[in-house]
Amino acid sequence: LLDSYLAVQLHHCQMNEFQIVLLMSLVMGIVYFMPFHISFLGQFPSIII
Image 1 (cartoon, rainbow, N blue to C red):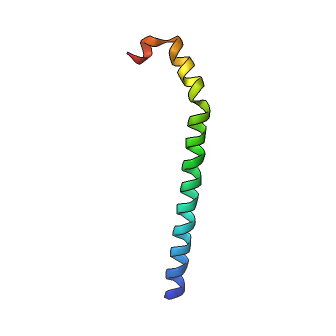
Image 2 (image 1 turned 90 degrees about the vertical axis):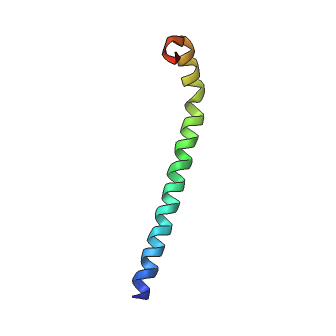
């Protein structure tokens, strides 16, 4: 019972690390593409309104 509990905890920890890496990559992607989105929206100010 203890082994399965530790296995679940380890799997949960790995999932948390995976989600953190996924979130970091998503944030990096947003920061990387932000100037493109700003310039794109700058060409069409009617979209913002």
